[in-house]
Length: 493
Image 1 (cartoon, rainbow, N blue to C red):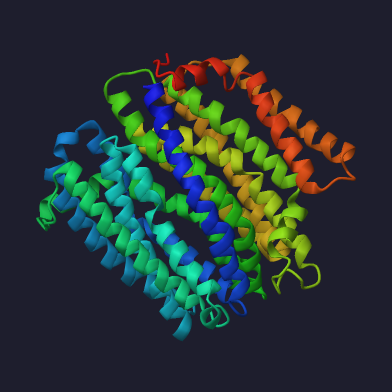
Image 2 (image 1 turned 135 degrees about the horizontal axis):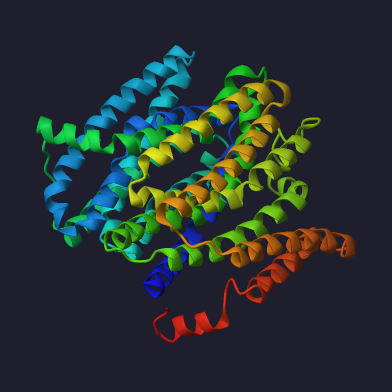
């Protein structure tokens, strides 16, 4: 099982690394630097509105469906029509509620029209996620990995043309960015259905049988509640600052510029979670020991995420300067420092995100929704309280500090409860190895900058990264023997 997991996760990581960083570095970032005024900040605020209402859109169907099909693959042809019908109904409800909320909080005219486009993006993305949840539940992880980059690949081609072709590059509008995403997600949904039809024997038909739909929605409600609470403590900050700060659109733009890189880094953890949910679900249903997979995931994710987080904190000014020196907002007096601090606080939470992807997914696969929702509710209270206190005083920086505190606290809580619920063995030596690694690379970062201060920061970053990777072998998070076994086709224990 470990060998199967590693080979598939490496493939998924490879295809995503080839595509998604290009999207973030060359498309999304250039769109923000190209569009006029606070248009991109408005887009990000509207995106946060759409994500908060994503509970209605998804209603936990993807997680519920993935867990059900992973445990009973033969039920897919029978369950698919009802699940698809429920999904379409929820899309309509989601669109109406989110538009009503947008109007109620003051969006009018152009902003309201843009909100409709953003809602269409989220609706089609949810449809793609639902189709992918079925593919992943059948353990077709490589197929799911390819489908996961299809939309971004199409967007890179279309937006890349619009941003580089002179007649369109000089007049690029945020509306074009939204329309492109709508078209590409629609194409991806069609491709995903054709794949699922071939491997899952499903048919495009609908089933609006009331009792069946009510049963599906009722059983997925705990998942929906969890998604809603996660959306609040993950995305409320940008909406709050955009609404209550006097320069809200600019603050939302700063937040978006910094959060973009955390979002890109989180692709790694999200890929693990997408694969782990059906994998854990099947292993737990068959009473298999999940500890080896948990330990493997933590050994891969935590050291790497600590390396990225510390590099981001120590080199935050250089990174932001490299990426946004052409931005008009970045060059306003005092703004560069804000970019730097917001990015440092957000990227510092990356290890916490990675731990949550492993341990919260384990609790989800186990069906421990009550525990998850209680933890998430506490996270919402802490997050909103800190946001409403810090954002009026420190704006985007206050939101970033709140995010770091919230994510770190939640990660530790998920670890404790997952270990107790699943009865994972306590390994003090293993935990201390990770703490020791973190302490050592903190000292290493300071030492590299001090010793190599006369060299380029990129060279310093490279030296730091190489030594950190070597230390992963020294601490035995990664072993040469394991790599040889995998490459040689031999089963891992």
